[in-house]
Length: 296
Image 1 (cartoon, one colour):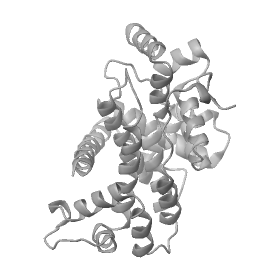
Image 2 (image 1 turned 90 degrees about the vertical axis):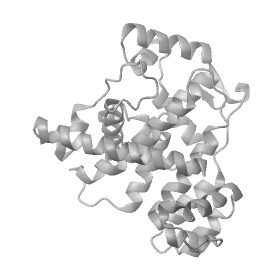
Image 3 (image 1 turned 45 degrees about the vertical axis):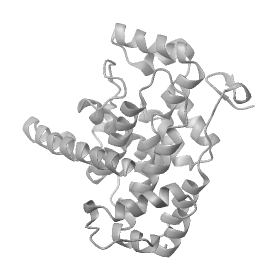
Image 4 (image 1 turned 180 degrees about the vertical axis):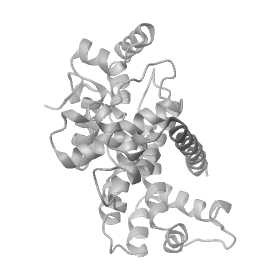
């Protein structure tokens, strides 16, 4: 019997299912030969998402002076990369809204996860342990960022009182939430979030990299560790920009080995601050765009 936070799944009041369309979209978008027609066909399976894609394609953001009513033309106007990003963001956002939460503020949670998704993709170009970063790699990184803290939501839904207790203890003692989880309940949101994504049958590279994103060095699979390294650094950079899930909490889980895997680790203080300042501006612009796209 599947369990989350030591609670059998049959006893969990509500657990959203992974949209099948997202899985199909991931499969088709990872094929370099996928045509705009094939992508439009998958998106059309979800009327709400296809309507959003059309609205965004018609917006001033994409120079929508000539109205578009055909999904194929919309995909062509937006481009494969933007369609992929927008569609994944919409699917995950819609699914997260179905959770019933008491402690986690979904707006702050969502902004943090958007930031980590965006930063993961941006900093991958500075990652020293891989020579070539493909668009497929970046797409998986982005989706991993959107899901990396799903365990927080799962914890809040299954045991909101205990979640609140751990959160308050973390704030009062100025200790990391994940350290207190490990000490008090012998598991943590990264482990539980990974198990949820595994239950949803998402690709192994997504849930295993999320499992180890606080301690990438524990990941024995080299390919997965690359994802965990990037996710770990992106998570900490987002928190340093004060784009955090819970503002008062301490986030001190940066892996030194992961940090040294990026060329900006060797920047001097001034150059690093300049890079972070530019990245912070880009991240906040991306969040604003995403929030606008979700409200179209």
